[in-house]
Image (cartoon, rainbow, N blue to C red; front, side, top):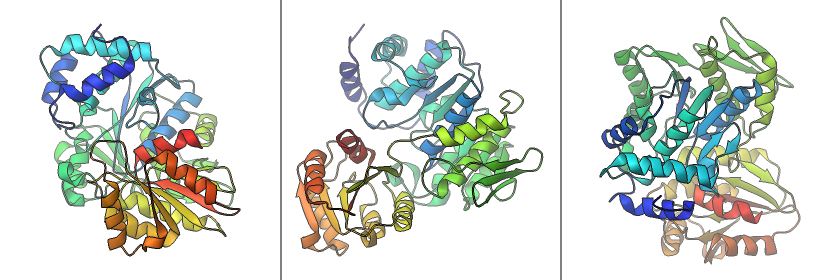
Length: 420
C-alpha cells in the first residue's frame, strides 16, 4: 500500500494532478472501468443543484433508512472529517476502509492523474459496489455534466436549485449553469426540479434527451397546514406529514422534491407513511442553519453564495434576537463576497474576520477591503488570525440575548463546529 494512513493519502492526492479542479469524465471513466470488480446494481439517485443538495441527500437517507433500506451516501465537501463524505448504512466508513479503497483506485489508475475529488469519488463507488446496498445517493460536487459522479447513470436525478456560483467553471448566467446541472439527466428517466424558477436550459435539455421532467407546482405540490403539511401528487398523495426538523421554510421545497424522486422508484423501493414521517423528523445536516445553545446562541451556516445568503438572512429575520448579532465570517476569494456581505449586512452588528486555511482563500486585507466597500464601518470590523481566535473573542464579548453567526464557507463552519 502506498500509504498506511488517511492523512498521507489525502495530502498526496492534492499533489497528484496539476489542477485542483479539472472537469471532464474521460480519465475518471477509464479508471472506473478498470477498477470495477462488480457492478453497481442497486438504484442510484443523483442530486445536483447550487444550494439545497445536502439537505435533499439528508432527507433521502433518513427516509430510506427509516424503511430499513441499506443506503450509501456520497457527499462533499466535509466539515470536520473526510470520512463524512462516504456513509454506508448511516455510518461514515473507517480510515482503514477508505485507505484500502484508495489503494485499489491507485492500482487501477495506471499512469492517469486524478484530482482529489475524482480519487474520492472512485473510492466511494468502489466501497458502495462491494457493500450490498439497496440504494445509493450521489451528491454532485460541481455542476453535473462533467462532474465525476456523472460516470454513473442515475435512475432518477434531482436538481435542487440553480443560481450563480462557480462562475469560472459553470458559466456566468443561470441558463449556462442550468445546462451544466442538467447533464445528470438520462434519456427516458425521471428528473425532479425542486425550485420555483427553472432555467429554460433545463427544460430544453430534458426535451432533447427525452428525460421525464417533474416540476414543483405542476406535477406535484405541497401545502402547509397549522401543525404539518401535505404532499400532493395525483396518484399517491401523502397527508398530515410532520414538519421537517431541519430549520428553514425552504426545507419543505427540498422535502417535497425528495418525495417526488422517491415516488418514481416506488416499484423498486416502496415506502410506507411511517418511514416518510420518521425520516422527515430524523433528517439532520450539520452546518445548514444549525442553531446551538443560547446566551449566546450560535448559528452555523455554510452559506457561501448569494442565494444561500438570502435564505440565511431570511431565517435570521424570522428568529427573534433582542441583542447583537456577531458574524464570524470568511470566504474563498473566487466567491461572491460583495453580494454576500451586502445581503447579510442588515442582520449583522459586528463582523469578526479571519482568513481561511484553504486554497483560494481570501486574505484578511481582501476581506476588510470588501467590507469597507460595502459600507461596513471600521468600528464594526475586527480581524483575527483564525476561526478559533475569532470565536473565543466573540464568546468573550457576547452577552445575554446576543447571537454569533458563523457563515461564508464550509471551511468556516468546519473550523467553528468543534469549538461549540
